[in-house]
Length: 99
Image 1 (tube, rainbow, N blue to C red):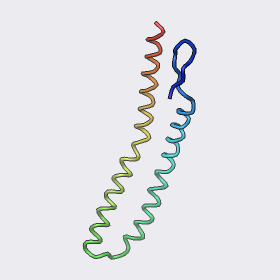
Image 2: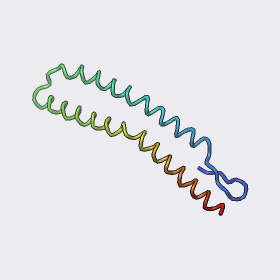
Image 3: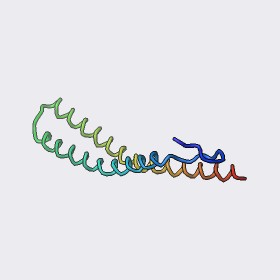
Image 4: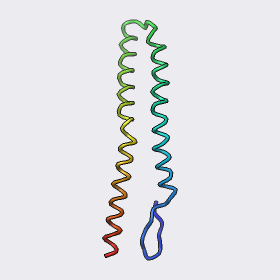
């Protein structure tokens, strides 16, 4: 995760940061695509009559999947906020060590 630099000061591996940025971008693109694909599949299935139990199950699955998409849409924000907090802590630790 970190590499040793001259004088005992650690620095962040560039590949780790690049990977995190790419992951955030990919999540941002894949969430709407996944939602669209699921909606298209659900609209096809919702036109069929599956009986009382089947319709109730389909409704429950739809509610749970959309709830998961709603929670998942917050994840890039949380990961970005965690990265900002980590950078701030590292900066303060670096400043404190230099004194």
